[in-house]
Image (cartoon, rainbow, N blue to C red; front, side, top):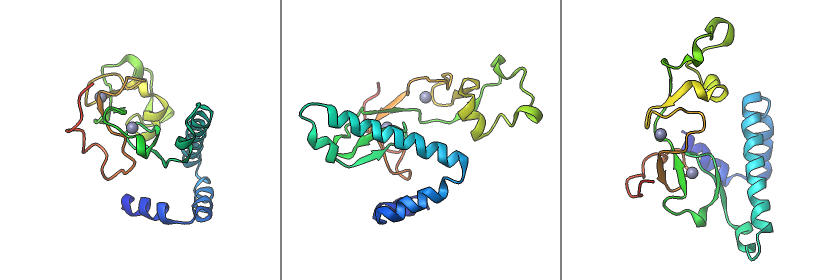
Length: 159
Ligand SMILES: [Zn+2]
Ligand SMILES: [Zn+2]
């Protein structure tokens, strides 16, 4: 389903995409994610434009990696460019972090919200590292298509 959505977005006229995005931004979480992506893309375009002799880059097709959430140029996607965690963020029960957390007051721990808000209370299932900023344990190519994410790590070298 998400692949169809991606395909449709890629094929849709820019003004349709803009209108759709503006509509979706009524949801505050979507809005935050959209703004973060826009900022990241703008930063990357700016860096590319300012880099000497890099005019070609600014014209390259930019995508956002579904694995590491970093923007990248599709024509510069090489093995090792992406580092990410292939596992899930699991609640760290041994962590004192949650000792004073009352789910009835503070919110459900095992939720997307808590994963975003309190990554330090989670560990990655792939490498057991604390989820608060642990560098990716798997390297590979950036992947813009959620359908293909996580699946083509085998051909790439480990970090
Ligand atoms: Zn990991
Ligand atoms: Zn990536």
